[in-house]
Structures are given as structure tokens and as C-alpha cells.
Length: 132
Length: 139
Image (cartoon, rainbow over all chains, first blue to last red; front, top):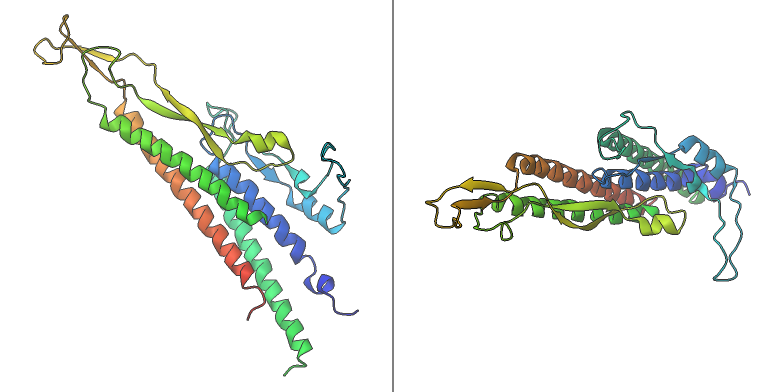
């Protein structure tokens, strides 16, 4: 099939999913900006995207309640950030300014993806209706 | 849908910060409450924040909200003042004032309200992202 949703939407679907996860990571950093001992986390978007496109999700299904959850999913790319300031006094490594800017950037990129998708859907509709 | 989790996280942050504002307000309001014994004197109260760890400990969940573990009373020494003419003075002529540092409380208040606002903005922006997604392909 020449036109499929997978082909038509390209990477935007995975990209948006990852962006939503990234928004969550950054939101939890900002919410914990005053929590003593909290370590800021970040997402390696490049790696996560690569994994998402190559479908590298090894998973074992759970058939019993006692089984361990052994999924290696895309949120494995979440790791701790390297703090600019070695010691803030209470062991917290969140830099609120940096996180806010990252959140803004992330949400704009998400909305850009939405816009591209809108364009693609419009194009598909146009093709389906034969330009009428 | 993980964007909805942003709301849970920001909500936990907002409630923690508003509890901080509450204790600050109570500290400032009681900054001048005089009493005649050590035991009865008001002590500065502060909330203890912690990342809500139960999810993080259970599995791969990397994103956690804030939890208020409890409220602790400051164990800084009280301000003892010698004022024999004061109606609340004890046998030795001392009155006891709370160990509230008003300047500290004011900065605490500013920090709490800024953090609260940041959380509100995050929720607002997550709402915009979701709204855009809901209207996907409708035009």
C-alpha cells in the first residue's frame, strides 16, 4: 500500500510519544526543585528516538502475577543529569531555570510535530476526496 | 498517556508548596506570640519534602511527584527576654518569644510562591499540548 498511516506520519508518532515522556521527566524535576536530596533526571532524546525507530523493545510477557517485570522500554534512556553546581547544600541537583527552558523547548517541539501531522492529515484527506 | 502524568506531578508540587506557604503564614502570624513558659511557646514549623518514592522503588517509573513527609518544629533556642513588668512574665521576670526568624520566613514565602507559579505554568503548558493533540486533524 502506497499510503499508510505508518509511512504517512513518519516519525512524528514516536517523536510525540517521546516528547510527552520527556515533558513528564522535566515536570518531575521542577516539582521536586525544593526536595532535599532529589537528583535531576534527563532524557537522551537522540538515543531514545533511535531505539524507538528501530523498535528495540525487548519484552517478556508476564503470565503469572509473581513474574518479574523485565521490560527494557524506551524510558530506559532516562538518566541523571550532571549538575553544574557540585553542592547546593541539601543534595538537590535541579537547576530550575535550565529545566524551565528545556520544558518550553520540548513543548514547542511537540506542538511543531502536531502541526506537521495536521498538514499530513490534510494532505491525506485531500487525496481521499480527490481534491474536491 | 504520559502527558496526563504531568498534571499529577505538578499537582503534587502545588500542594507541597501551598503547605509550605501555610506553615510560613502560621510562623509569621505567631512570630510575636509571647508566653510565660518554655513548653507553651510557639516554635517555627517547616514541612519536610521528599520525592514520592514508592513508585520509583517499585519499578521503572522515573518520574515522581513531591510528598510532604510531615511538619517538624524548629529546635533552635527560644528568645528569652527579661521583662518583669510584662503581664505574662514568670517568677524570674522572663517572657518567652518564638524562635521564628521573620526574614527567613519571608524568603521562604517568596521561594514557595515562585515554585507554585512554576508548577502552574507547567500544567498550563501541558494542557496546551493536550488540547493541540485533541484537535489533531480536525481542520
